[in-house]
Amino acid sequence: MYRSIVVPLDGSPFAEQAVASALMIAEASGAKVTLVRAWNPASYRYTSELTPPVLNPEAEDHLAAINYLETMASRLRQATTVTIDVAVVPGPPAEAIKECLTKTGAGLVVMTAFAVRRTLLRERRSIGGTRLHAGATASGVVVCVRRVFSELGISLTGKRVVLQGFGKVGGPLAFLLASAGMRVIAVDDVGGAVVNEGGLDPASLSDHVSQAGTVAGFAGGDAIDPDSIWALPCDLLVPAALGDVITEEVAEKLAAPIVVEAANGPTTTAAEPILNRRGIFVVPDILANAGGVTASYFEWVQSREGYPWDDEIVADRLRTRMEDAFTAVWTKGEQLSCSLRRAAYALAVERVAAAFEARGLFP
Image (cartoon, rainbow, N blue to C red; front, side):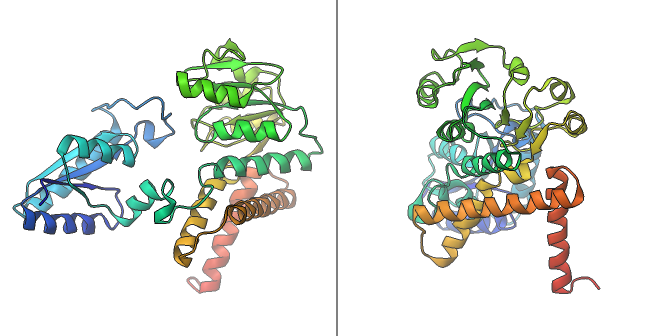
């Protein structure tokens, strides 16, 4: 019936159920089971789709994945006669599954519910994926950009933006910021950086990246050293790629008066007080890039309802959620006379504490 069955494991509590199902099928069909762990380097940080990660057997993530799989395989071999292989594949789960299917000739993939949602739903609306998920993070960032400029009494029109990263978030973000009347004057990615004081054309830049795989070499701008983008005179900096890029050194030379964090954890702990000392206004990642997880929540709600929302409803509810979140964090920051990052954390702790108290978990 099947020669091989692939089981991509995600570390969720339902992983063993998926393996058990695969083993039952394998016992009946004489198939081999391959346990797979999708592995992404750099502690699961953002990796450009255009630059596939290199498998490093010495990497901590790789060794942890191997140990996880071998431990499960060892336990299962004692209870079954089915042949069980293990494999650690670089890249996101979807790419890992494709590679395993090709290499093993598997005829069946058994996945946990969590892995199915994480791998497929964002791409396939036919099985529950929500509309407008792809650009949700960028849309949420733009809401925060509009709000922070409004609260500070600054017009968006003609203001200069430096964008660090041009991937799933940075790419759509360049279009949205330009549409809002801002000038994206510099963009960098893993391959290089380009600048144009008159403003880069997001459409032309996107076409170039789709062909070249990097912003480097774009004819509509001049090449610059990626490390020099931090010191470029501008009105807004949006880190939209890796974490820990705004270090102490970068914080000291940063030219932008406003930073909106589209990436996860782009500012190091040591750099935070330097930004505060220099009066650089930061909209933190916990607020600014929440559009993506908000869209995932919408996806879950639609799945529970069994009814997909129209595009207009998704966009309107996402905008409303982000607006409300910004207002709540801004208000808390004014009440506590603190940064928006501290205000966001304080608000989050208060909400969790209120929920515990309401449910009576603590006296």
